[in-house]
Length: 218
Figure 1 (tube, rainbow, N blue to C red):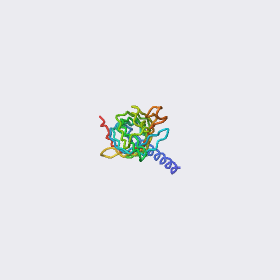
Figure 2 (figure 1 turned 30 degrees about the vertical axis):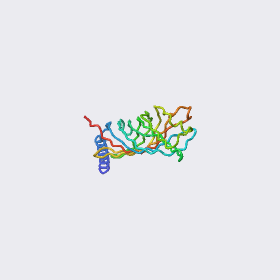
Figure 3 (figure 1 turned 180 degrees about the horizontal axis):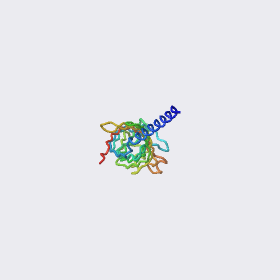
Figure 4 (figure 1 turned 120 degrees about the horizontal axis):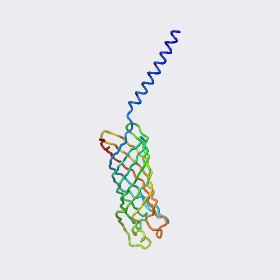
């Protein structure tokens, strides 16, 4: 009987010790604190314009750059707002005409960011709308003027919009946070009026590297 009582007492002490240790562990775990960070980015853009009727064209390769603000309000959820300078457009795949149009835009993506993270690293899912504002256009016409290509000299619409979705990877370091992203941009607005093309939507694939610094907390 004595051994039985000792065994029961020992079991109760073990349970109490485990419960207290677990409680201390939970108390010791720091609570989540929202973060705001500011960054810069640069990358490569591969773009085309989807035309109907179809137009044969080459992939347009350009450099993009921008500034960013990120606010992480929940452990795995945040918002990232960017202001990017991009160059889009197309090059007709015609060795006779060799026509190129370059369009410069100020682009504003507003992204919801879902993070699958460990202590120092995170895989990211970015999705959201964007708006673009035409800054300038440039035509390169290396051919004798042709009436069938006159439509491409018309000034595109000033405002464009669409959706973007992509994956990313972020790494936190003592120097700051580095983020590598790959995204697909799909335009929903037409660059030209329906009198020229029934569809004229921008499409692009962007790979970029961003650098963030966290805002200092008071």
